[in-house]
Image (tube, rainbow, N blue to C red; front, top):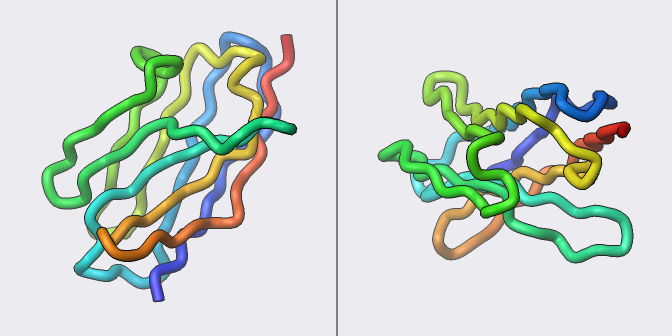
Length: 116
């Protein structure tokens, strides 16, 4: 069973930085990509960033390009989301997702709040 566990959320002022972590409790060789999504109150869950577990290739949603960086630490089975230049509109619950091409595994989410 692949179980992502997020950490690192918190409250920060606009312009500040946070780093989210997502550890996969059991590394499954079938994990293809790891992704971050976010969901603001009353809004749909939106894609933020993804990384190919094997190649390290990353893709970002337009609203976060140039501000967020996703990376991975293979020995630690962990991915990170470095968030710089945070804005109030980045406030949301951030979810980590592990995709095996056939299944999606979700973490419980971590709250990120950016004050003006």
